[in-house]
Length: 119
Image 1 (cartoon, rainbow, N blue to C red):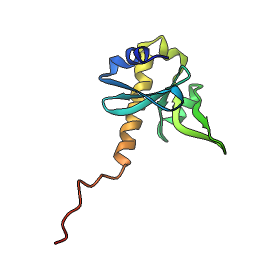
Image 2 (image 1 turned 180 degrees about the vertical axis):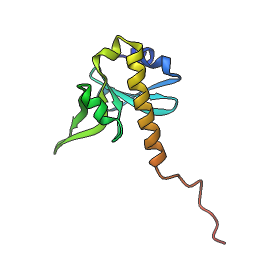
Image 3 (image 1 turned 180 degrees about the horizontal axis):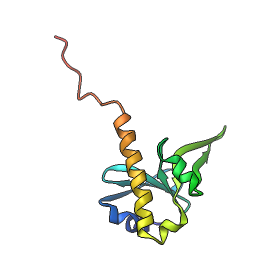
Image 4 (image 1 turned 90 degrees about the vertical axis):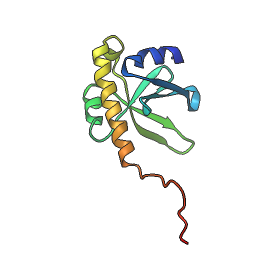
């Protein structure tokens, strides 16, 4: 899937940034939050412990990639097919992904602005 199609898909949700990622895929940011990725034409949305079961119940599957030693499953789930045709459906899933990304950001430790002089 090309950058323009991805931007068009997510444009109704606000400012969209699409950046090249590993293996020719794309990272997708909305309102500054990494909510999705695209790999081989499939869109995967951010999920967490609160939302993963909703994706699973809808028949979605998680994003899995292979390393030289193992398969790695990450917290992104495939966008359900009906969301490509129905903007309300897409909005529902994208909002779940945005909420998961916001929760993940809140859990990250704050970066220190700089070293203080112990003087």
